[in-house]
Amino acid sequence: MTGNSKLTDVGRRPPSALREPSPREEGEEIAIVGGGIIGICAAAFLAEAGRSVTIFDRTGICEETSSGNAAAFAFSDVLPLAHKGMIKNLPKWLADPLGPLSIPPAYLPKLLPWLIRFWRAGAPAKYEASLAAQAGMMKLAEAEWMDMLDRSGTRPMLREDGSLELYESEAEFRAGLVGWSARQRFGIGFRHVGGEELARLQPGLSPRFVKGTFVPGWKTVADPKLLGKAIWAYAEAKGARFEKALISQVAADQDGVTLTLADGTTRQAMHLVVAAGAWSHLLARQLGDRIPLETERGYNTTLPKDAFDVQRQLIFSGHGFVITPLETGLRVGGAVELGGIERPPNYNRSKALLQKAQKFLPGLDPSGGREWMGFRPSLPDSVPVIGKASGSRPVVYAFGHGHLGLTQAAATGRLIRELVLGQTPSVDLAPFSPQRF
Ligand SMILES: Cc1cc2nc3c(=O)[nH]c(=O)nc-3n(C[C@H](O)[C@H](O)[C@H](O)COP(=O)(O)OP(=O)(O)OC[C@H]3O[C@@H](n4cnc5c(N)ncnc54)[C@H](O)[C@@H]3O)c2cc1C
Image 1: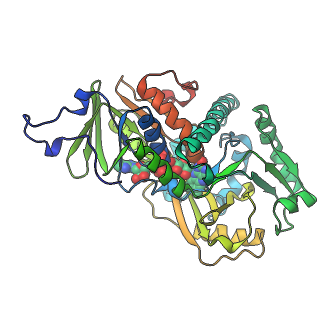
Image 2: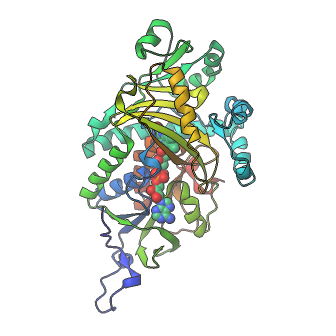
């Protein structure tokens, strides 16, 4: 993972007599901005197709949001966030500054246009369209991840023990039934449980939980950062390269793209893939595309592995967080803070989640944890942007996966390869269009 890019460094270009043909002349070089799980998977798919590809990232491979998430392959998580049940909960959640959802008051004016779009995305017809798009995407996501795990030799990192969603009352359970029947329509398997079965699926739970839903097809990975690094090692073995650089400017015409790095040098390529997570809209705007990307900041604490014997991922939807047993520890967290990309983290939010976890799993040892915050890149309709930039330029966008970037990364990688190579996409990309807003 060193700066060994072969893309033309125009800022340090040798005299023209010595100059090697530029990637534009060679006609096959692809630049990806962003070394998170989306960029890595896109690089792996493109490198597998024999294309020459370089990832640019200011920090490294899988070092930011993709490093510390909850590790779920949440293939059954097809419900868009904007729906009537969730909008009904907003006032209650917002009343608690450390609750499942918070908005720093000073950020509200900037956020308002996105919130209005979010509200509109909850209208029945729009909700149904997003649900169908996500369900189709998830079928592809599962198939592509399973194949990618096999091709890259990373299948041992997969945990296939399902998830357990927990409810504190009959009323909370019943409120969730609409969502479960929507999932049923798309063939997603689950089983509502209580009593002994609930206790068997997770011994040591607080008796406040009266019911649960077990989803056998839910999967997690050993550690999202380790998986990302392993997929990158595979992509690198296939010829993908990495250059550590902050991209400050992107420009494109029909013949290719020019990236300007923070040090003032430039790189040229035939194609650009923007996979810069929660910062992607800043680059898209330079290309003339205004995309309403926001960030849902999320918090967690990773405890030592023996903090509690958690059998599978536990989901506390009413409180907006999960507990995941990883190979590297026990990760407790989630929540949403609509606070933008500039504000420093408020780790009181991680602490609040940990305190709740102690109540839900009496006996959990909260000591020795590592706190973390990540930036979910989120679009108002909960559907990512996967598609071409406007104006017939060789630029493809791959961002906005919100809560599901790990889950949908391999499918996105495949779709990006199809877009770059001009092949027919594996799913209808209209719902994912960057021009839909
Ligand atoms: C608490 C939490 C829990 C989550 N749990 C899950 C889960 O269980 N399952 C799931 O599927 N998803 C989960 N997610 C969501 C998932 O982590 C994200 O959707 C995913 O990591 C986004 O990946 P990405 O590659 O788009 O962005 P990132 O991982 O943010 O990568 C983008 C990269 O682009 C780089 N970059 C940005 N701008 C520039 C620039 N100008 N120049 C150079 N580099 C740049 C950044 O440095 C960064 O490395 C969770 C998120 C959070 C916060």
